[in-house]
Length: 484
Ligand code: SF4
Image 1 (cartoon, rainbow, N blue to C red):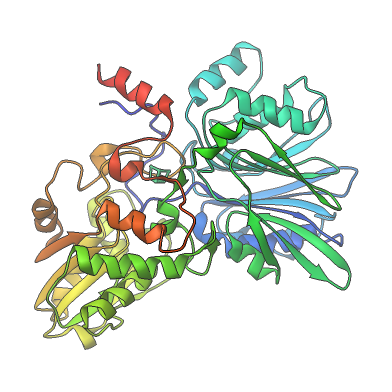
Image 2 (image 1 turned 180 degrees about the vertical axis):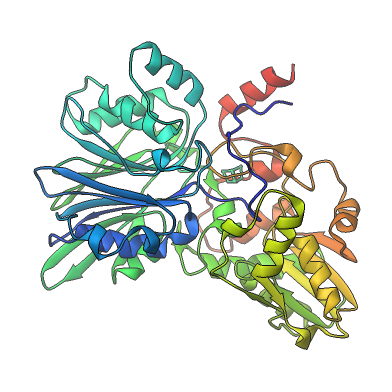
């Protein structure tokens, strides 16, 4: 089966799937919106390490600075000083489409017939090949292979009368997942796709000087600014922020009612201190861990987590099992993907540099090792080996999500079925592959019931990487045609 869209960059380098990006937008009560965007981006750094950028508007012109690397590597005083103005958008990127180079760093800024605009995007357009061909046929020059540039060009080429109408024009042409921040000279717009697949929230920061509006991928960006979360943007909603806030709808209500929020945000992508769709991510992961114990109990002496994202689930698993939880692995947060080269020897070296096992409490113990997910299996194996080297007598792997067997086409870096360790293997075969004494997963039903807990308004979920059931018919159409 040929996937409908396989991004060009190498995908073997990461331990986990990565989200494409973190986005932020501000209408500030002072001229320092870009500095606030910088701090908000620091809080969203986990959503992308490859590049970072901030665009700002002082009401007359838009300015931009982008660079490769982490937010604090790209921005210092010298870069922030020229970025004056009350409006800013920011972006931190992990690429799922387009190569990892400066041409693809966001935000994108362009002059248009309606004045300059800047765009930052999180997600993936399913029909980007057709859109690209159409734009090129119409003589529009494209400087990158990023679908974010496509979005900007579609917005720029609309003949509609105002930006809300131009955004609606763009939305009528695209299919896929998108959470956008769009900035003109005078206003900031937040846009969310009709299924609400990728997160985008709005909040405000209130000081004596006045109110600042903030859009962000996760509420942790608001927390970093001392602000408060107001709400998530609804699926298919456009928010226009100036001194005040206005909301517009883009799609018929029946289309917006079909929600498909990415469940991987709860499994791994989001920070545990984020509040997303009325759910606290840490609390939800605790439920996943407790349910994992029901779905896949194991006998052992100590429960340890692969840090950091599996910690919540491991704590709850241990509590449900009545087995002590302890720290068994230290993680060096300064070792990034740079060291993890796409060949097997270097990848294993990268894992050893990043994770260090603690002889106490592992020596002589039967260890239950909890991770949030296994996608490629190229980290679990080396970690299990390290645990045995410091004296673990048994290692039982438990995973707080179901086996990943299907590609994601909606903005998370999981595009090739052949990458997935569970795609063609039984659970016992995966256990043998990673060297675990046993392996158990959270069930799909257990995952859904953890997200939609008692008393919560049910949230429609995309679970396609686990179930193969995609929320966008276009994916199924393409899968059918590519396999026939
Ligand atoms: S396929 Fe998986 S990773 Fe992709 S949007 Fe759906 S739940 Fe998220």
